[in-house]
Image 1 (cartoon, rainbow, N blue to C red):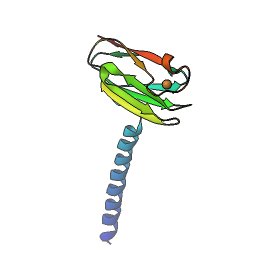
Image 2: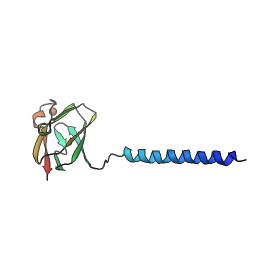
Image 3: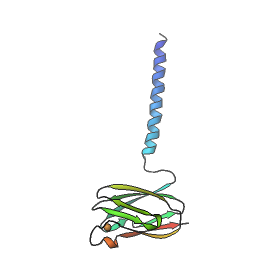
Image 4: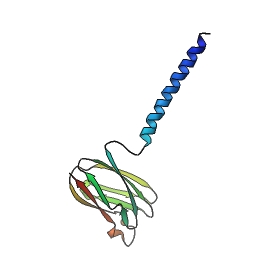
Length: 126
Ligand SMILES: [Cu+2]
């Protein structure tokens, strides 16, 4: 008789432990991370969209970039970034915006006749 309720109690404890774990996982699964400035950028001939990125100095910036129609690249010399993004893939690049100014980035993978004009700007404000 005494064994019955004990087993039930253990069962409930395990269940609640499982539930709180899934809640934590659900929170982590979201794209928003506190303290990280996430920007989604789409790359296609011959533009970055958005082409003007604005962040604050000191921010951790996470660029989530997808190349839709061709292999492209994201080259931002001032922050020593040169990342290829294959057609149909998403690449995440993170950096700290540790200086203010307006910085140019451009496509670093020859993608067609308009490749040289495929560029954008990063503005880091105080
Ligand atoms: Cu290109």
